[in-house]
Image (cartoon, rainbow, N blue to C red):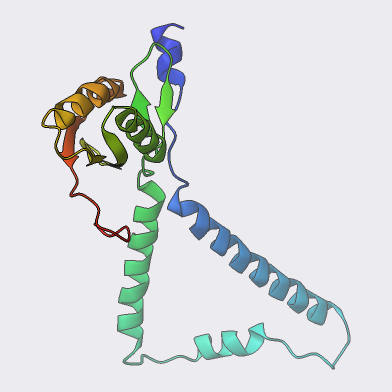
Length: 186
């Protein structure tokens, strides 16, 4: 794979917030179009059983005088417009981390946590492990043989190479958890 093909692959991202705004706007516009179809039916037919919904609204708007609530409502509408504009141009949230390789490979933070936890639990003397993945740091907390002074170093040696696989490489740290008491409480 050449460099131009590698850059053509898009990074996985979250669904844009504008999708849901557009969905709601579409449903609202469908409702307005149904009202418009109803009004066309009323105007085109000779029925007197149905009354227009649009005509009273147009009369209210046409005869409106300035009211005290109109200015704040106009300001609120402008703010809503700015919020919708921001939603439409806001970048999507990153959901995956890139793995250093010749081909583009991405992993979810959950998968990284599982990978680091499995590597830590494979070290002799570790009973269980827990991993927290942040943007620039991965913390592995191990629970096991508290009498072994080299346990933390051995776990770090086991999980640190995994941290170099992630691009950009995060800081990997290992902490020893307090021994468990009876009943599973820490």
